[in-house]
Length: 201
Image 1 (cartoon, one colour):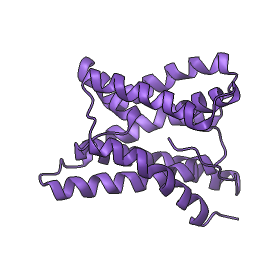
Image 2: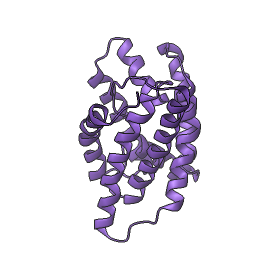
Image 3: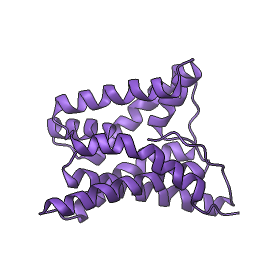
Image 4: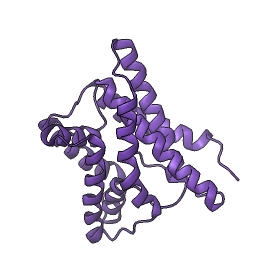
């Protein structure tokens, strides 16, 4: 998940719409990227690897890993919010729903459409749910906690993502050109949405 600073704006109902709309869009992006079979983002390569090994769904593992990651927040002195809990519960549900509904692309061109749409969807979703200002996702909290301990943003993110993608690949998760493209493109596209996406007053 990309690091981006987006101000919390709007009334509570509008912030809730941003939060849950963002999580739904994020889950759809996950589903698109998984179904493209061109390579998952690091965390979802990990979730898919666990799913391959256990028979549980990717969405179930998104939920379980999110809950387990919360345990790491204790020594990092991170505080969850409603957005954190919602991320744990709903992101996996939305991802599984998207993968259930989306047809597997039968042609490489459609697979690339899935992948590129997924990256844009996740970038916009990040702006929406972080912009709601209701707490970071559990995986974001590890990064911000490590930064608080003195690591740079780049080093904290690199250590986390290289670990999960390596373990995910070893477990059988899909790692490929999509993984690399996601890593390169997600930050700039998220920042673009953060600057240009009209925020409610």
